[in-house]
Amino acid sequence: MSLYDLPPFNFKWTNSFKPKPIIITILLASFFGFLAGAFSGSLFYFELKSYLSNVPGLEKIIEKQYVPQTTQEEAIIKAVNDVSPAVVNIVISKDLPVYEQYYLNPFSYQYRQKGTQRQDIGSGTGFIVSGDGTVLTNKHVVLDEAADYTVFTNDGRKFSAKVLARDPLQDLAVLKIETEKTIDANGALAQKDFPTVKLGDSDKLQIGQTVIAIGNALGEFRNTVSVGVVSGLGRTITASSGDFVETIEDVIQTDAAINKGNSGGPLLNLKGEVIGINTATVLDAQSIGFAIPVNKAKRDIDQVNFSGKIVYPYLGVYYALITANLQEKFDLPVDYGAWVGRNASGDKTDGAVASGSAAQTAGLERDDLILEINGEKINADNSLSKLLQKYHPGDKVTLKIMRDKTEMTLEATLGSREE
Image (cartoon, rainbow, N blue to C red; front, side):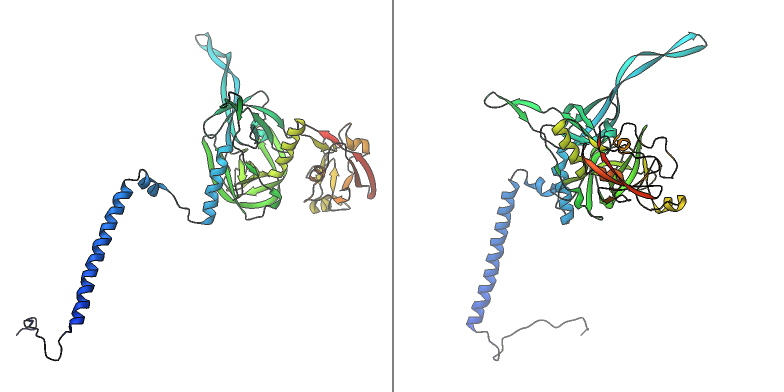
């Protein structure tokens, strides 16, 4: 017999092993129980499948609903969904001359103006801070007083915007759009409020904190979202837009992408609160952008609501913050303070003390070193401009100065600086 030829199977009960009736009963019950369970389960499955197939839209919901993978991702999605309806696109338009070509003779021609034509010349971003249509944006977005500004909401509505005020020190401006009027069920005129953002507290920001930027990127991609972190706090930058140049102190640095057209858009925390207003980016770098802390904007909004304008206290001096390098280079007696009539390189400025200003009335002179205001030392963290913003026009302040290495005290009543 070959190794692979098995003998026929022949089984017979032996006297030593005969199944008892109780065992046979248990085996038969288990077998038929299994068959019954399988039949019932398959019947339930087909009944459930038939029911779900008749529920309209359920299959699409299951396929399209996205489940966030992390708590942070969930917070970002919620913040964007909550804030986006209040983010607006600001389009700048202006009447520009139209030129035509005409011939002086068959061999030469010139150009002459043939009327004007309304053209869109730029765009930016803003966001609505009150239900009646108050909009916050950058000053450089609405800098041209001869231009017209149109606001487009996220749902495609179009509104003419009026510039209420431009901040004389910060790159901020406040606009107003009129709410839509409707007739209610009683036939009365009702106002439909705009969606608004929630303003946070920029004084509580921490380096490394996650932030979200929303804006009209490149003037083309509406409500573009980018995510990053707070890269630095208390920065001082010199920003420019065309002929407009401005030094802005105490700004937020972030690596969230801020592109052209994002100017004036909100910078959010994970709660969906606005903690900054996107204002500038470094063109020659990667992921270095800046935003103005929202607490500075709160001051502007309050002033516009109260008086219709933005006003700052004004001392009236041109100065440079004294650093260790300036002290060493010019042999100054101190390494802190404000050097009147000098620039950051230590060179003399064209002006030192503004005529008729609080500084002139108090007796300040070129090359005076202003050391303190009301006992607060002036240094890189607390510049003269930053300390002055704690006060109001008309407030009296005590200036501790040094003139020819001699300390003295002057009293000044602050003036006002408006747009």
